[in-house]
Length: 218
Image 1 (cartoon, helix red, strand yellow):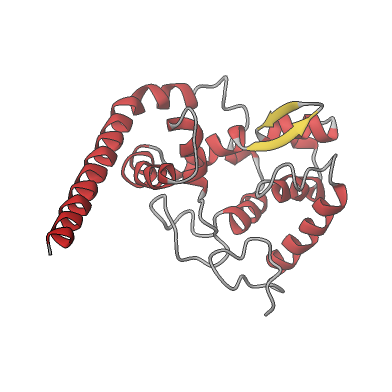
Image 2 (spheres, rainbow, N blue to C red; image 1 turned 60 degrees about the horizontal axis):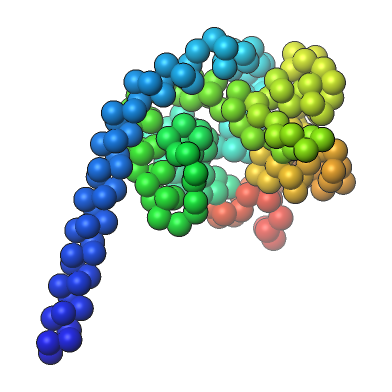
């Protein structure tokens, strides 16, 4: 009986401490947001804006990466094909974390995204940040961030000069930037582009939240 009581008290204290810690982290994020916003929305970083893309291309990106983007409040654990990370959560990781480690940090990431980021950054601002900071693999040993940089690194052109097929090959990399790298794994990238095209045409419908590779039997 004493053991059960001890375990109950220990568990309760652990939960209280965890909630207090995460609450403190959210409060800290609130305090940092003004400076973060100033840094991530400056004209030096935002060289490509969502308005620069054809509406159809934005729609393609969202269908693949975040189908509920304009409806959710930063976190989406319901939409089939979404996966566990929304665009909002993806940018939260780079904006609010110095060294993100999976595990409890994922809970913290979700809380900050929901309570802080999505309340302080418009959807348009979030898209602009994503377009300019998304990790898109390595080329010649150097990391590639953002679609403009990726257009130059992979196709030796500006983003505005990309064909739709080239754009889709970049979108295909987002889920696993090195696994679907255009230069080092061209066949895997091409296969993923084909699966994305089936998704976009409606030929394939995601079966679950984690169906992000579009290979489940229908």
